[in-house]
Each structure stands twice: as structure tokens, then as C-alpha cells.
Image 1 (tube, rainbow, N blue to C red):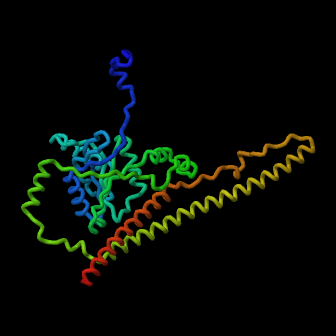
Image 2: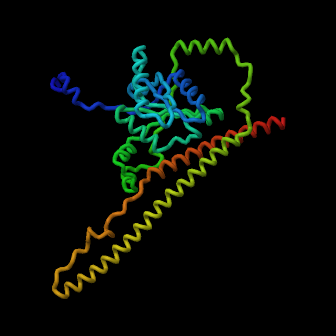
Image 3: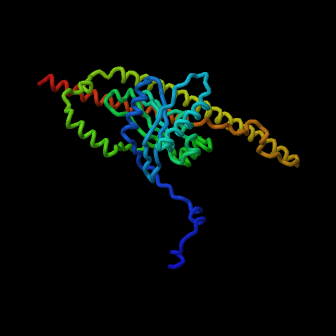
Length: 338
């Protein structure tokens, strides 16, 4: 009992592996959300990005501040200038005693078309220096439909292992039991405000009662939004068809190679039987120098997984908007009947 309760030295404590609790929620201050919305709407339909600052506390990732990245021309040195801009902004925030720990970044999107290889590469670059980071996605076009299209994403651990190994073959995916829905993990968002802001908002609600209804929510026409979703969905279907053609071409080459191998083996076995009858040593039945025994590399399934994920996102958006449109139509029909 005394040995188990003996105090440990600093080296022993440092040598023990720290158990990292999984990320449960992303807590964002209301002012940060307003900054993100303002930045994304000012430059819409252009896509913008920005840095998220905050603290990593246990299973909660607190986002307490953010700042936008400037939009540059194509002929400028984007990487060097962007790194210098981030360092200068974080230095200025540190001087005024503001949280300057990077916890991720935010970016805008159009109709939820954010699931790309570039997003995954950005995640991996952040993961090299930050243990846990998230990406806040804001969609101004969907927010115009009466929904706050704000979500926090992170890459799953099993997907990051495969991406580091650069192995997206069917065999590896089956070993990890990884499907297209397991690439990204959506983390719940919790909006937090200080006590002073909450008290101020309470005073505003009491002093300024709502006297005007929001009639935009009853707008019956959703054709432009639905049409653009359908256009993007058709493009994704074409891209998925092209990816499937790559795999069909691969399997045709594989079956052709297997047929050539069988023909070569039959010929070699017949030759060995003749050599054996003549009292000669048989030849080996495998020849690594023969091109027909060279394995054909399987195409990566990453692109098809991302396209399938994007198709599912478009279908969910169309389903949601169609459901809201039907509700409005039934409401107007009931009002007209009365």
C-alpha cells in the first residue's frame, strides 16, 4: 500500500503518456460568429478564409477570437505573405492580452461544396503543429434560406492514418472498416456569451419589442436555390461516373493480365513436362522479370469517396429545402381556404 502511494518524480510523470480526451463540443463566442458571418457575406460569392483563436480545454475547444485572411492576387507569394500576416496578427493580439492560440480556421462555401482534397490537405498541415483543430464552415447561400448554415468539422483518426500512408485501396479500406461517411466528423457547436453581453441582450429585448414580422420566411419561391443545387448535383454525378470508369478500366486490365498469366503458366507447365521427359531440370513457374507478373496499381478511392460525400450533402440540402417549401405551400393553401 505504501509503495503504491509513494510520490512520483517529475521524470516519471513526464514519461507517462497523457490520455487525450476526445473532442466533444466546440464552444464559440457570439462575437466570433458575427465576425465570421460578416466576413463571408461581405465577399460573397467569393470564398474567404480566416484564423480561429482560442483554448483547448479538455473535451471542449473554445473559440474566443478570429481574424480574416486578406484576399491576394494570383501573382503574389501567397504562402510567404500569408505566414507573415498570421504571425504579425498573433503578435499584435498577444501584446493586448488576447488569446492567440491557433485552434483552426474558418472558410466560406457555396451550397455546401467544401469536401475537397484541398480541405483535407489543409487539415493535415494544421495537424502537424496542433494536436486538435477544427474547421468552421459557413454557407451564406444556405443561410439566406432561413437556416444558420454553420458547422464544425474535423478529420477522423482512422482516415488520417490512411491518408498519411497514402493507401486508399479497397483492401486497406476494408481493414479499417472505413466508408465515405467516415472521412469527416461534425462536432456540435455551442454558442457562448459573457454575462455582460447576456444582460445587455436582455435589456434590448425588453426595450425594443418586435413590431415588424419577417415576411421573407414566407417566400414561396425557392427555384434559384434548388436549381443551383441540382446543377452541382449533376456535375458531381458526372465526376462520379468518370471515377467509376477508371475502376472499370483497372479491372479490365487486371482480368486481361490474369488471363495472360494463366496462358503463360500453361505453356510453361507443358514445357516443363517435355523437359522432365527429356531428363532436364524444370524451369520455375514464376518469372518476376516478365511484365505480365508486374502488379497493376489500384486507383485511389479518395476522390470517389469525396464525391459521394458531396452528393449526399446536396441530396440532404435539396430534401430540406423541398420540405420547407411544401410547408409554406400548405400554409398558404390553408390561409387561402379560410
